[in-house]
Length: 269
Figure (cartoon, rainbow, N blue to C red):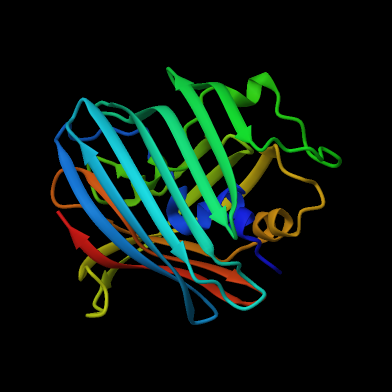
């Protein structure tokens, strides 16, 4: 299972696994301001290959999230490069609703850009530069697929009234500008994070995740097929202060090259 740079940061199958897509949920939440800077380390088979910085700001009316990643690569499995992403939109007591999304990747001087416009919970426009030329074997994105969707960046933040199983038991519809897919999450158990090498120690909630491709993907994609069948996709969530926001503490996806892992290593509130 080989991961190209573009697949790592644009294909939602992998994009999702690297926290750039962890869905927020439509449940009652506190309408309280929140801001944070988080850092993560990504590894594959125990080898660190990328660092990710995320800045989040929610003033209870509007929100923004900015992400930057540096990828050193892992031999022939993961190419080196960099990526930036941003999303902004409207914040309410119930949900984060995106207005615009931008993703830019750069690997060996080759840039790839995706932008999406959203309105009232629907994707109303998107652009990919350079455009995809080969549509052979690609599942067509239909108009109905763009309704009642959210983005795979803002979905990094969970909002909930209580730190319990309701955070997990949801099914989300995501559109990245390239692919439309669902994320089905299920509560597993509550645990206590104790590692001093991470940026948080305390209660966490463990959720299992299923990736469900809908459209925009290639039917012969090895990554898509693998993740759609995977039963080892786990996310641990930790509270972001006491204002009803939650962020991933740890993520694990089993692959043929070992576990693809992401761990929270820095947090500033």
